[in-house]
Image 1 (cartoon, rainbow, N blue to C red):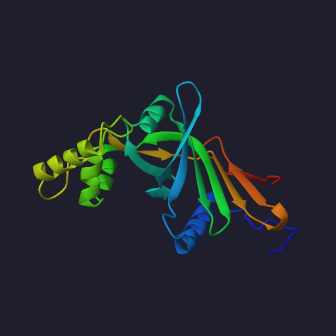
Image 2: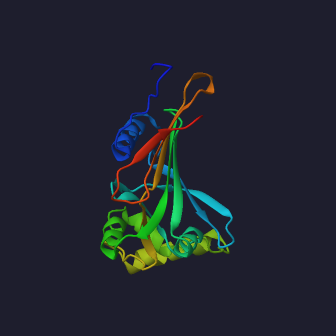
Length: 202
């Protein structure tokens, strides 16, 4: 790697994301698809948590959640978000920002029913982010659903859905010696326009 030039290619950012993501799948010990999802409260305060990327394409980056959870309510109130992938094994990170859209019911059904049966039951039984009097209450709900649906898929709750972030900004960050890090920002306002890119000071 030459010190006097960027190691982050000027290329299609989705192709570059895919290259880095595949390398992370080979090097990260757990969940290379884990990403921080940042939203905002109704008062404008930041709110962040880890979620899992479940699909990616030039259309955007997709994750699934309970829309009645805190994150779901924040998303529905303000359909914008930011994502952060940090792959410690590679000493790289990617920041992604843009508007959100909800996936179709068909997409949500397909993903929900691709999950292990126990995960379907666990999600259907959960009032995510709501106060829980004791853990046994949740376990009792799980047991009741398992009895109600002894085999096959569990119906997807209407409030369990997915969201897709269509990026307007994608920033790639690469660790380099002496904290002379490498950063390249890709951005576009119009989703049909070409990406513009620039290096950033570390």
